[in-house]
Image (cartoon, rainbow, N blue to C red):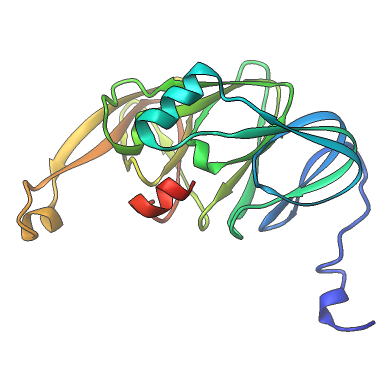
Length: 225
């Protein structure tokens, strides 16, 4: 059988080593030799001798789901083989954490990660009870984290002299040592619609990076994730 579909651009390459890699812009491949973790429903294909098991979210996860309608439902993948992960054809990226690293990420952007990483669902400091900024997942340890993002993300440096303000529905995550708080500003669009004219953003201060996706999560889409 012939055709562009069967060109090297689309046919998967042979695996070279265990672990995670970007198969293409929309999909992550994980060569499993032991155990890894992934978001439930993110697996699109697999081969080999693998077992899949649903994992509970713990008390923090249940609290997050009860308050925000969101969560980070996970499954463990064990054995030897290969699995491919994707979510709604979103763009995929890898983040490598060293032993001293910490990365805070919105649960809707998590695709898969190494079992060597520890994770906790925590309240975002200074966020009060505002929108999607109430809870996020904090990853620590050494390993690789696979993320999915709607569009190409913006990685914005944060410095002590220049804090960054982000929409709570657009933020993907941020690095350690950044302080967070809510910031209220005047919104021209809100005033034209007859609202209070007040918009709320998450302010990040310190030194590090914040990742923002080029679109906001609508209430309907946030519930689906």
